[in-house]
Amino acid sequence: MSYTAIAYRLPRPLRRHVLHFEVEIEDAVAAFARELGSGARVLDAGAGEGQYRHYFPRQRYCGVDLAVGDRTWDYSRLDVRADLTALPFRAAAFDAAIHIVTIEHLREPGSALAEMARVMAPGATLLIAAPHEWEVHQAPHDYFRYTRYGLAYLLEKAGFEVCEMRAAGGYFRLLARRLLNGLQFFTGGIRWLCFIPAAILLVPPALILPLFDSLDRNRNFTVGYICTARLRAK
Image (cartoon, rainbow, N blue to C red):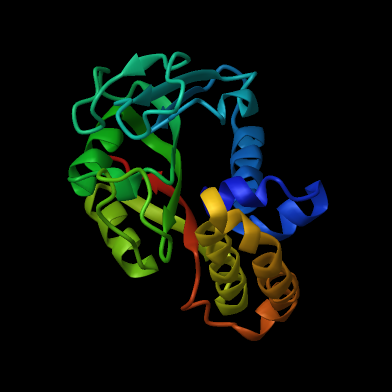
């Protein structure tokens, strides 16, 4: 059982406390959607199960994914199944795009970003979330992790100008997440007998540590980054 699956079993206030990266992403997507005009064409590049579709009721949302990442997911709500390095859209077809924790799953991330730039109108905005220190997931389709500098380099090379880049938490939130990751080793079979003792040991410090996160001002230790970028005029 994954860390996220375990965390979602916690009471709602605690879920928000420990799933910081996920909550930051949801807040960023909601804010991004509010700033877009009614009828704006929005590309969700790497949409998965389409969990962000409901944030764009006023816009023309299009979810695209290759649908190979997770066999347990329901990809039936996708609008298009396609490789992000070869999108089946005309140039400048979209006014905005989101690309949420997908770039680590791309073998050719630079090519995918360049293709997103091709189908976005000049001046269009992109919201991207990328992991920095995150466990392997959706194996074997998991290839990269990103620093803020690497992510900025790829975006700028593809024709984007970075507007904002922020870390989703610092060292203490990362450490709390790693403690809770440990719970996954006490699930399944006889190991469930040790789950409660492990939770007693790991959960209290994991809930306390985020309270110290403001001490890490540099945010060099982080779960991931959330970035907004604007496509430069060609």
